[in-house]
Amino acid sequence: MERGAIANTLRSFITENYLLGRDFTFADGDSFLEHSIIDSIGILQLVTFLQDTYGITVQDSELLPENLDSIDAVTAYLCRKLDGAASEGSPAGSQGAPGERA
Amino acid sequence: MRTGPPVSPELLRLDPAQETERIVIRIREMVFERLKRKGVVVGVSGGVDSSVVAFLCARALGKERVCALFMPETDSAPESLRLGRVVAESLGVRSVLEDITPILRGARCYERRDEAVRKVVPEYGEGYRCKIVLPDLVDADRYALFSVVVEAPHGETKKVRLSPEAYLGIVAATNFKQRTRKMIEYYHADLRQYAVAGTPNRLEYDQGFFVKNGDGAADLKPIAHLYKSQVYQLAAYLAVPEEILRRPPTTDTYSLAQTEEEFYFALPLEKMDLCLYGKNHGIPPADLAPAVGMGVEQVERVYRTIETRRKVTRYLRTAPLLVEHIEGD
Image (cartoon, rainbow over all chains, first blue to last red; front, side, top):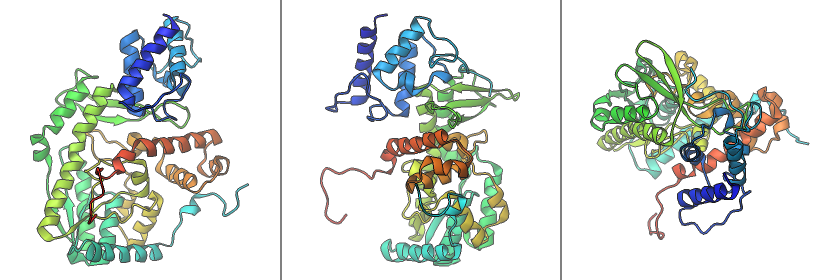
């Protein structure tokens, strides 16, 4: 999938759900948390959006700022996931799947 | 380089006699002069915070001006009521038992919570128990997303990350418990022209570990300035019964036993206490790390988490907003 299209989709999702009419512009590299764009529930909603929209599973080990804290970060993470380039040990690696035994 | 006393839990040491005297004077001023009430109602949970508040209020106002309320519900540990009675008996204060289960059933608290759990665990039903937990975040810079732990009737447990709808549904339903308790507290306060004493400590108040208009509502909060370890120091000084001091802090909110660390702090309370103190007093992470037995990066992460939680829970501490100032406020 084309990176620009992913970034646009993400920007629309963030704008519609979190800016709520605020007159605020942010760059693709700006941190969601540092700029108070998204809170922790927002991250949970973002993860659900990514899973539902792109058919991926975001593993517990991937819940990292380097994967989810800006449009650039999410786009890069998604591209790695969608390209199947994710490998264990990288930020988009996989372990500790949801549904693990307590 | 930082100057001052060495960084250790000793930084949180206070003079319990002096601090007790200071709080007792303030409670008298707040209740009699500011609030013009005749006494206080305290919801006594059998935990150390509410016990210390009850002891302080009895010392400040006299035992005949304190009403201890026990408000168990079906998910409460039986130990909570027993320990609450121990507190009231050792103080000699009047106590009232109000089982809030029927009110919660009427509000469909349990039903709504179970419906929310079933969004991620479809088999959840009769005989199951649950709690929500946070991951251990000290060793990784991960986002703190909640999971639900469910225990089937035959004892098997399963942990599943929550969806936003399930998380919000469980929390919204469970918050009925704290709000119902507050409603009962104000009933007894109105009946006697008393004030309601809240029981949050500094860690809970600062980090938003309370329900808005639930346990967050009160007319006075006598220990909201004290770190948890300072609450224990006062408890020992005030001769709060030993078994209450030994009891591990619990939320006593879910049907499966849940520690406060699992639910909110994700770090042992004594370490969290010192980290909060360190952050509040500008202690560099490198100086604090040895005192809490953690790495510098871990302390940096905790400092960031404290700041983030302050930001995201600001709403909980915000009073109702008005379009313009109204005289008499």
